Length: 123
Image 1 (tube, rainbow, N blue to C red):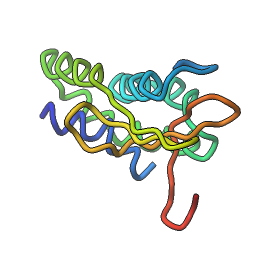
Image 2: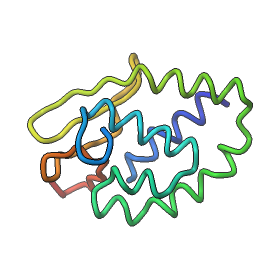
Image 3: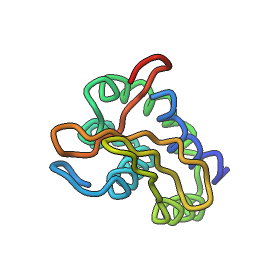
């Protein structure tokens, strides 16, 4: 269940820092935590405009799975988020927990890293 929950929290962004800046790793961690917490506003605050519009739908679909997590599974998922690594190339980054695929996409917008959706064919 833990792997499934983390996969949903991180990988769902493939189909989809604090405010004001931060490293891509910090933003990716905050986004993962917002997803685990079901915090739409926090996820939107660190997302691009297009990704932000989809957060209520994505988090709504995930909420039942997140509610099924035990306290131990949640602790493990949060610990995995603390191992976040990003591969940065210019103003784009791909992030994921250490040893996992880098599927969470971030983009620099006005100097701040934001979670982004990159539909095939878009840049």
